[in-house]
Length: 119
Image 1: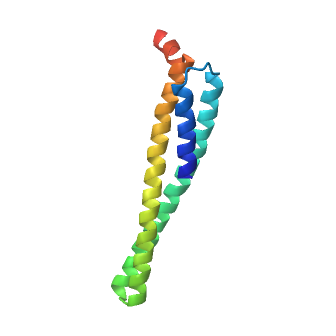
Image 2: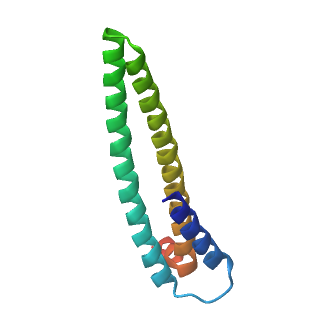
Image 3: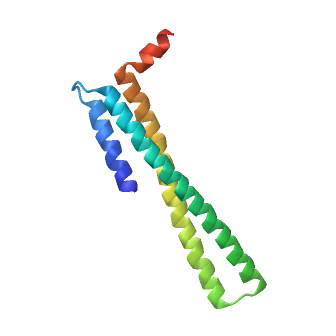
């Protein structure tokens, strides 16, 4: 998913940096749809990250009550899994924030911001 995020971002930045005439309203609509997809993906990963965190806390509690090597290994595995989910969510979050800035640049190119400034 992160690779898709970077590819779309690269395409949008290339469009914005080119001097070609574009249908900026169509580009804006397409980009808004992609933002919606990524927001959904981000929400799902947030829910999974929180669920894994609760499972991790439960495992820690069980390990504290009944310490053994197998539970310690499970704690380690779940902690590593949670760490990877946090890193992935962090990357998704920052990517979507960059996309919001790209959206503002698209609005500038489409003339939408000048229209709003006149009001």
